[in-house]
Image (cartoon, rainbow, N blue to C red; front, side):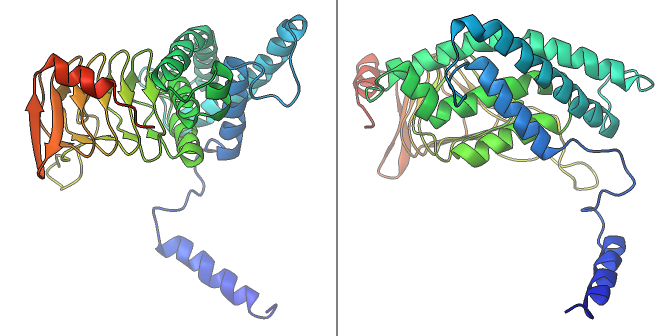
Length: 309
């Protein structure tokens, strides 16, 4: 084996020269995936104090605990954001002083943590009120994958909005790997959001969800098609995902594609395939292999009262 190793090294290095696009040599230092994951874990400790720690935290310790943890997070996050800016500077950044931009973005991000906690409280409340199997807020935070995926997405969204490259996607893909729930950091999501069960849920980058939206496992909010430029490449940065109104419920296996609008108060039944907008208060369901719609309050009340448990 030892005699073969130089030959293997030579062949592998040769592939670095001939197989392009999957090397990153002589370029800017990229953010560390491991460092970003560790930071994300600590951010969860900050937004849910006492839930992600091995030892109990007492109120008398909370100032010291928070001070130490947020100082550590700030230092590490600023370093990773600086790397991200070296890789792809944000619009309007002073390219001659990326360190100052990294410090500013980190500070702005950390200042938003209380607001993230406030909206996450509504998400936990929505899960407790929306799931008859839930016994407490503690169970929801400790055991429900939807809450963890939502929390990470809400944190990553703050960095996405500040045009920080790579880091937000690393955060949400880590959550995707853990929970089976894939929410792009670009998605805009209102308060009281509840994902029940969660496995296989996909929410695309330009999706916009209103308040009190509830979705079940296997739901896809995706793109219907990808416009291409003159060179045949996908056009990026355009609106291509659904808009979900307030108080909408989407049942298991439903697929909604494209820049369509689901009106407030609507119910999308299980396994529905939908590529068109529907008005508020609509019930969309499958019958005989066809997608049908109703506008009846009694049908909505009946479906809302049905438990998936």
